[in-house]
Length: 327
Image (cartoon, rainbow, N blue to C red; front, side, top):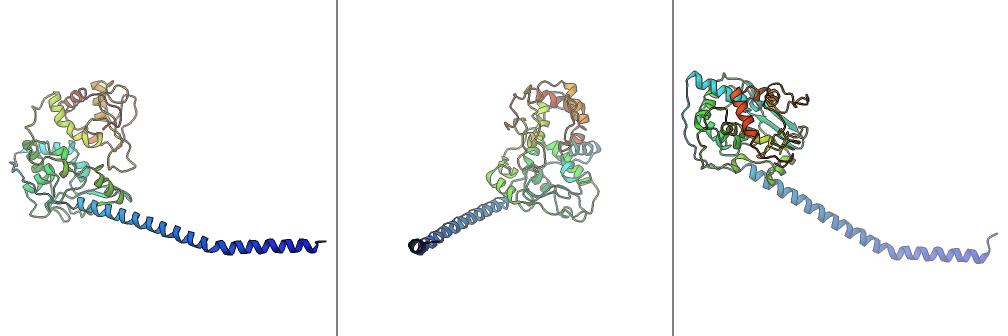
């Protein structure tokens, strides 16, 4: 049986506990209030910071460029049109714009956005009727559209180096293709790609091209490292200026890393033979019999002539060995 004294002790302890709780309750409320204020301020700063970055990214994306376009001659002979078709196929134009230049979806990713190669024909949804030769030069060589804004995801830093004869042939061929009715949505960058644009991790061609320096004439069409270098500029967008491959800046997250095609013997193609390189380009098969991922459009690049492929191989052998990803 509980004694009276024990009951008194319990009541005293309970009274003291309640008193301590009553005294500490205002302090707890104040603490929670300040924690809430601090968290709210941090969230507000984060929102403002992200909003500011998005505004800066949008400003960079919508930046305009005044480019003095050098006029070039557009040939009409069949040999030049054939050359233009060959360039369109083997330099990646059809990979992004479609086999008939009707436009093509390149990537659809919530983080990166939706990227489309536009319809380059004069059909419904294609180029406007007043789209001129000058507009083509501005787009291909300078990465700037008719509205003087940068053409996002257009790798003009690669095509800037096409000489006047090749660029003229390419434009002549594109202008000759039949009209295709195809309405392609505009490029819509996603939140991640906007931040990558702002940080420079996705290059904007119009920003990095020296618009005042015209490209030199192309080297002689021959099996030489000089002509191979002229071709290899097309490879730099995915494999990097150092040709060491790695994750493709701004590419679809599902894409595999680009292969190291420097002369590194273990990580690159330095131990390959010319025949193995030609087999890889023609048939998409590496020396170890593994298949090249279709993200690398080898069926198109494999349409290069033997002179072009052997020249490219000759040049790649001169590229210093680099570890993979050291772009």
